[in-house]
Length: 269
Image 1 (cartoon, one colour):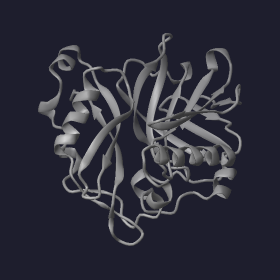
Image 2 (image 1 turned 180 degrees about the horizontal axis):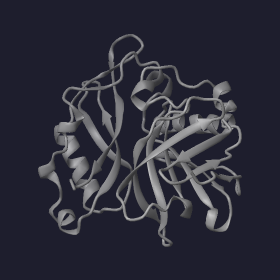
Image 3 (image 1 turned 90 degrees about the vertical axis):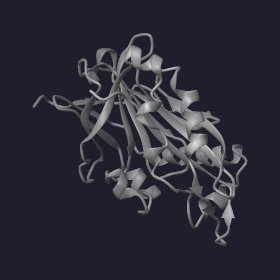
Image 4 (image 1 turned 90 degrees about the horizontal axis):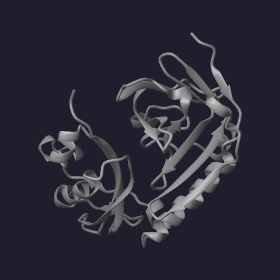
């Protein structure tokens, strides 16, 4: 195994407020070894959506690759999961879209319904290891307590901007629950013809606003990769097919709320 590439910060954390999401980023290393770490949240939640970009992540001409991410030190090792491979910017920097990851390195499904990391646990995290088949990159993030406190402030402001009460959403006794499997909302036959001809694919992060009956009232694209054919179609189909049991407030009564998820438009090999 090649020796791990250990990178110290080469810039400060930058937090970007947007009406549909919060993005935090930081640069590590220099020159050909420089790496950008991105952490996204589209709602108040325990984990983050991770992406990394830079020449050290060049993995050739593949669509996806197994990657293990581990926050540390002194935490259990993360489990390998497929990450989407792409490029970013005019320089076409290699990019790994790692998806939702838990700060305590629990499997994402395992983390659902479990206590969120405490501020003390976040403060104890000082590095992120990204392990691919033929290389390992260690990013010396520094204590993650203060950055994640800023991220929580941002996501609370998001909910307020959407016209909802952050405290009421945090105290929900039940989140909106899809009545049918989300896998039935978008189907192979829905794949845009133009995208099929070009071999185009996309990852779409979306948010549905829901009324107190669980009916979608609006659809927002929170983040996406390239592919102009996909966002409008995604929202059109979600508004048509997605139905929910409504969220319940602290008193057990239905309340207006929101639902976020992502979809991968990819063609079978």
